[in-house]
Amino acid sequence: MADRMIEVSDISRPGLELTGYFRYYPSNRIQLFGKTEISFSKGMSSEELSVVLRRMAMPDTPAFLVSRGYQPPQQMITEAQKAHVPVLGSPLPTSRLSSVVTEYLDEELAERRSMHGVLVDIYGLGVLITGDSGVGKSETALDLIKRGHRLIADDRVDVYQRDEKTIVGEAPAILRHLLEIRGIGIIDVMNLFGAGAVRDSAEISLIVHLENWSPDVNYDRIGAHEQFQQIFDVALPKITIPVKVGRNLAIIIESAAMNFRAQSMGYDATKVFERNLNSLIKEHTAEDEGTKA
Image (cartoon, rainbow, N blue to C red; front, side, top):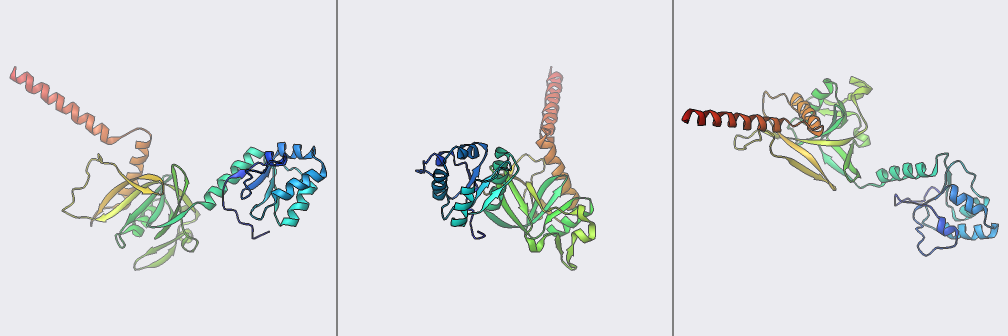
């Protein structure tokens, strides 16, 4: 039974199959038996139920799953044992069980990708810090941890798409809770700073890209130009921060996260500045017209 593969997250409730309709039977899904299916099966003869369950126990059927703590029919156990299909049970209501299993399978079966960067939880926001090797990502993450924020992943971040709007990042098992600092080596963040300094995973809300300061680049000074980076099917907000001696990157990134949260709640400092500027222009225009008059 252990070699049964689950390749799709969809769950099937085999009501039609119990009536003998198998034209479109999704045999590669977990077959969920709830109150309706169990009640219907009790009205079938032993031979009819055995025939139906025998047809349902296909080579690619991952499992039979029974909700609400119901006792599986003996015919189900018999035919499942013959076909080596696991029979599982749960006390959860059928709809709730279907939702939990589907959500779990969506995460486990999602396509994963590794990205170079550092993922930090800042005030509950997952901030992915990217940039060229040696630009100071890990050192900045260490400063953020000392300021009370939490490390999720350093150097390599495994990301996957949870739903149409959400990208989740986590650390590979071999790097979990570890941080590499040049000149020191590998440090164990949980042992040094406590369990409150780490998280296993987080939704990525913002990407902060660090790049070496160049006098030839005209950096955005008022935040009027929005940037995004595509990860799978989700476009995530992105800001670029130039790095040079004397800039406290931890405080800058912390402020960027706070500003992003404020924008998400409807407060945009850039728009406030534009309104103030427009008001100032109108005042000066009115004064100039009054002077000419």
